[in-house]
Image (tube, rainbow, N blue to C red):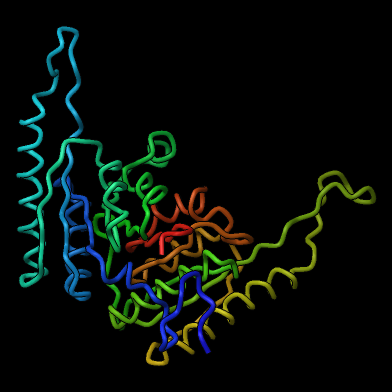
Length: 315
């Protein structure tokens, strides 16, 4: 039996994610506390995979003045600053990955654009998530959100103080809804759980709609429709995902749960006791809009552990 995941399977039935796990891990570094955490996470991941680690630092291009000069320094100054920052990132990475292949890359360009450009040749891109208010995150966006939206490979977003790494006491959690993108997320989550020697927890949420405005009821009354269709769909998604994983990864400890509530709230709550949360690019039901919409943004911003985002076509 081979798993119906959103990527081809190998002869042994496991997801063929060689393009993910065999390629370089690229991490953005700007010397902020969040980027320090990202480098540390990426260095450990690369060491476990035996993959090359690329530490990328980018400086925004200089702004031209009215006289044609550069308002904020020359391009060569910025390039040297980027190279210096990348070198400091490599030194940090060496503390976690002393024997691995680690490269420093300094560029002049927008950080999000540079990371997205390199994602086509990467297995994973890792970015830090700086602490921002909800208003700032919604209005201004962030490098981490931009990279997660546009990267051509899975992206891991690591916050400052993002909690434990995956391990026996810190499971990998994946949200499912039965869609093909969610199955791709399950495949990556299973591989990462194997690499980190962590248990895998599969979760789906449900939230029944509320009917309003029935003619025979008061104007302010509401009627909750039967919850069974939503509970059954969520339970089926979890059961299918667990079956796919256990058939392909019999060595993994896999559990599942079906939870009533908002998808972002459920995932954020689970993240407080997890090592990694994995979400698919987009789905339906409880996880609708998981990549581009409010759920994914909320999970990335609020999670207590790193969050891996799998876009459609990124595996």
